[in-house]
Image (tube, rainbow, N blue to C red):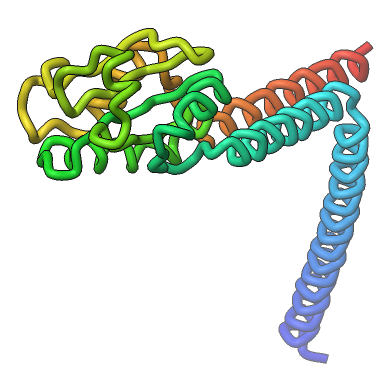
Amino acid sequence: MDPNAVKSTLSNLAFGNVMAAAARDYQKELLVGQKAQASSSVNEEVDLDELMDDPELEKLHADRIAALKKEAEKRETWKKKGHGEFREITEGDFLGEVTGSEKVICHFYHKEFYRCKIMDKHLKSLAPKHIDTKFIKIDAENAPFFIAKLAIKTLPCVVLFRQGIAVDRLVGFQDLGGKDDFTTQTLEALLTKKGIIDKKKDEDDEDDVYQESVRRTVRSSVVADSDSDSD
């Protein structure tokens, strides 16, 4: 037999054995990786189950649901009292309207006055946003008794009521820069400063606060579990 041919055959056999061994090792690594991944998934599921049973998370969730329910109930009560829209009332309705809610904004207007129409536009925009305050208006010509009782001399006049008592007022546009082109935000800021409406929190901000509380609780749970595992 040709010595060179024998040598070539032996080399091929050796190379084949090396490749076969490499293939076996590769398959072994794949199986190990798959098992590790499966194990990790199981651990993750267990961790999630544990977090779902976390009493702090359950309390946060329950508190959030209770707060949303309470807010919904308050909004429903306010709506029944006429909050959430800018409504016109009559002189006969006046006392019941201003004493029936904690905070009331009443615009005494004249239908022919341009500035009264400007004020109407801004108050109409604010009413749905500040549902905890009642927004109403009354035609000054048709409410002579209360015009005299409240000593209203200039229109537009926006009277602010708390618990049925007139606590403040906006006369004309003198607190709004004295010009017709003030913005709704300017009026809103002034009414907020006077305490008749509240500074509104964005709903997204409230959700962000809730989500951050959840994340902090989750992080605390993970750290606590890590500490117990290390012990």
